[in-house]
Length: 278
Ligand SMILES: Cc1cc2nc3c(=O)[nH]c(=O)nc-3n(C[C@H](O)[C@H](O)[C@H](O)COP(=O)(O)OP(=O)(O)OC[C@H]3O[C@@H](n4cnc5c(N)ncnc54)[C@H](O)[C@@H]3O)c2cc1C
Image (tube, rainbow, N blue to C red; front, side, top):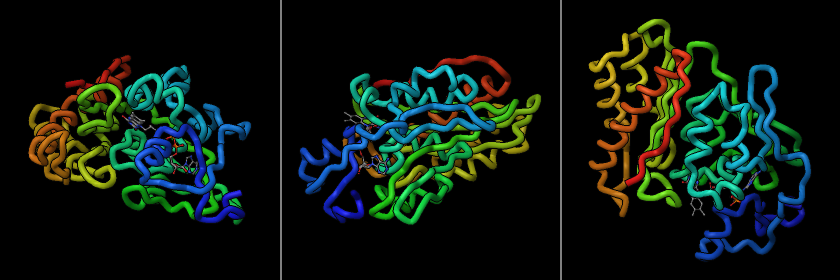
């Protein structure tokens, strides 16, 4: 249908981004192709050391899935998206395809080994998420292609992650957010990935912040180095959520808290986290 109807057609998943844009007249598609009538595209499966999430899987289904126990950062993300109404409708496939700079999923999934399965008239292809998102609201999808599945490799033993966002209230996007995934052996961080959300047009790969931890003992000093590097990597825009300087400081504080939880989880502790609300 996408290829038959051409550029004037848009896919409708949970409608939690598209419908508000249509109400504001920022989007005005002539045709909506409703994915809610397609069977077999909403599922969570554990297979070959990875979680496979069908594109139409709702945030709420992910939040409530017992299969997330081995990778709690996914629960941190799903459970913190807006409010129950949005989580009951919004889908992981829609979120990834939308590539909204303020969206939570991409920030978290980019710290994981994540692939996006795409389907079009030319056939199927699997794209690493880092290559899938090209810019704000821009992905590699061609017009007649859709996302069918997101695959997230389950982190091994000794690996722990955490995602924390700061929000002005539940039903709004974060002011800033931080996703951290660490490998820890004894007191040493053997590997690290840190992504920052809402502080640039795409989730920031805070490479220097991760490097400040990699191969180091996790101490106040190394955490402080990572915070400083994260703050420097952020490139936020001032808006009604705060000044650029405020967001830089905020994101550093979120990195600090996320590191603390990630370390505890890497050591096998079950830790629950909640976003921070103003
Ligand atoms: C009040 C409110 C607060 C919100 N707060 C947050 C928040 O805090 N954090 C957050 O991350 N999100 C938030 N959202 C957005 C929400 O997470 C959406 O669910 C998500 O952005 C889009 O998913 P959707 O299924 O609703 O997609 P839709 O709105 O249906 O579609 C979004 C776009 O993706 C395309 N699309 C959808 N599915 C596919 C597919 N399978 N393949 C290819 N293209 C596809 C559509 O054509 C459209 O262009 C909020 C939304 C609202 C209304």
